[in-house]
Length: 347
Ligand SMILES: C[C@@](CO)(OP(=O)(O)O)[C@H](O)COP(=O)(O)OP(=O)(O)OC[C@H]1O[C@@H](n2ccc(N)nc2=O)[C@H](O)[C@@H]1O
Ligand SMILES: Nc1ncnc2c1ncn2[C@@H]1O[C@H](COP(=O)(O)OP(=O)(O)O)[C@@H](O)[C@H]1O
Image (cartoon, rainbow, N blue to C red; front, side, top):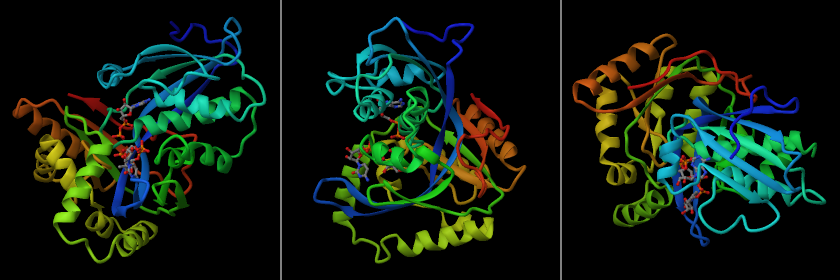
């Protein structure tokens, strides 16, 4: 099975796939098709996965050979995914549990006139799986960007976003990343100007959350308690305005997640970690997406100290927690993601 060859073939290219946090997430209701209408503001952050892609002249056209390594590869395998597989993109990719990279390649191959050149993709998995950090969706978007280049398709980012929306609700966001508001089921995107100078500290417990279960539990919980009158719009607007003004104090107060209660029920360690983050000094600490990760925003330069405090307190409780510190993307930051040089560590 393919690992990254050394030296890399001349046509090999790399795509960086950052994680995301949901700075605000409002669930507006369940649609007829079972998916949920949402209003969310997402931001690209570290940690990042990496995809290395190159042509495979020895394999038949239409073949994809995928391999996965990295600190979170085992966690991916625990969800039932193969860490090495050979796939014919023109058939048979829909059965079984599939890596979203394969789903993305198959979806893009449908827009090529004949079978596309055989390709190898090596995924270095660093984003915790099932943490609400969007790693799988980001890998899918990175595969779309990389294959668009490798196969010379010349699709624009807008066109790639349309392909992305067929793969998963969050995938379109990751085509460009940055700071964006997503509505619909997550596929309708608008750029959010962000003048906030802030660091994002993410803490991830050992447990994972399955997104579909979190939405299902939200259905149950929201039928038991009356829905908030605002339904998102005002909260999202206020958050976006704080981001545009670079008002960190206000942005921290406006962090919000309607899936938090569901995440706590499905992953009690998420609630425990949120408390630990708060007592370590993380103001406005919030769950990302459907969990299990929690995060807080800190003033520039303060993230490292907060991360160390979380590590210290977690270690004192004999608890394994992964902690990441990242700068929030500024207005100009768009993909390709430039890692702003941060601490990426776990204990
Ligand atoms: C909750 C969020 C917040 O950003 O992120 P994660 O926690 O997954 O990272 C997203 O809405 C997740 O988007 P994504 O992870 O792409 O979801 P998908 O793979 O398309 O869908 C997985 C399942 O979640 C449910 N789902 C997803 C999106 C949505 N708007 N409504 C839903 O009800 C459906 O049951 C669907 O079958
Ligand atoms: N490349 C991938 N990386 C992570 N998860 C993937 C990938 N491909 C498919 N998946 C599946 O997606 C689910 C979790 O997705 P992930 O993006 O890590 O979490 P979340 O939806 O919480 O952000 C897992 O069930 C996993 O099997």
